Length: 391
Image (cartoon, rainbow, N blue to C red; front, side):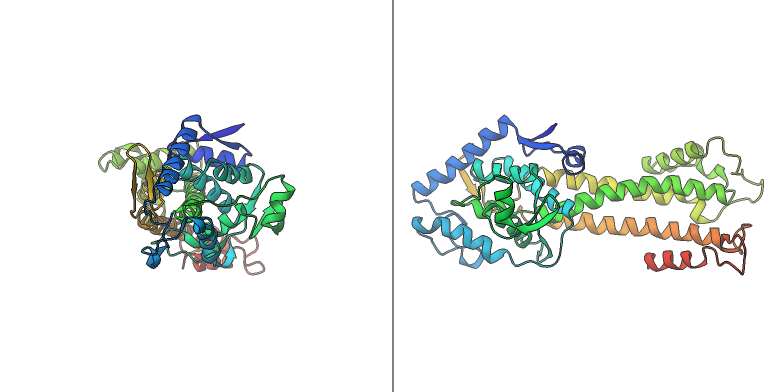
């Protein structure tokens, strides 16, 4: 089983298949042609002595320094080594794997000027479960993810560290054990490997998938709380949600009602009380708004995982080589800030429901749900821990 990448159509389902279900990755035929044309333009430009940023110039402040043809390969490996200065704990294995996949997909678009054999080695590492060890600190985002992606690139040249079949070792040893040969970078290739947003986007993708799962589970958990507290179901009926027509709010209300269908524990308006507390009555409004955020985050990440985020970009159809700023991480930064706000609210309203379950002043349940109040404290401090996490 395999996932075919072309730089334009990678989905969350395919990412999940590669990272968690063992699918292999291959490049589509159409993408192969784009990659070859892009590379040919780079080589033609070098032959014709055209000055291109990062191909035959220095980087950043050194962009006006022209590099001789004899030094172009050294320029690329020097770039990788100097920029691989990340710090802190390494990213989780699945995040590094997503980084490999997203970088391969971006390069498969055919705007980076990388050689096919270099991209294929990246894909071979992913398919053979060789995962570079990538420190999680060191990227500014505004310049893309230069430091993290440099640690990824070290693996391809047989340097750095990696995990192979669950064992930590040098990058060179991992490639050797897998029967792979390190690559010797040529003009533009080092820059093509490290100039992009794949570290922040990989973190975002993994966070989004976990957040979506948690948000969906929250509806079911909230439904159990409603049963435990003899919650009033009237607040979830379609009539009130039709006059505030947020689709996500309506969907949450419908889901809650479906979970509670046939329940003998819930109540109706006026049966025990007239209305419930906000943490129960406003579940559709809060959980629905969280789903709105998740939809926004999903949209932005979907665009980013199928984008060319290099500099410069190689346009083989027009022959143009354009220096721009697609490496800037602002769209993902905003999306991740928004996701953080939303998920804190998942925790916030959940903690308030826990308080209502364990506080004898707020429900008719045994104090702290203790089977033997006094002798056993029950879930008294569980609520403290929940409140601490929310804070």
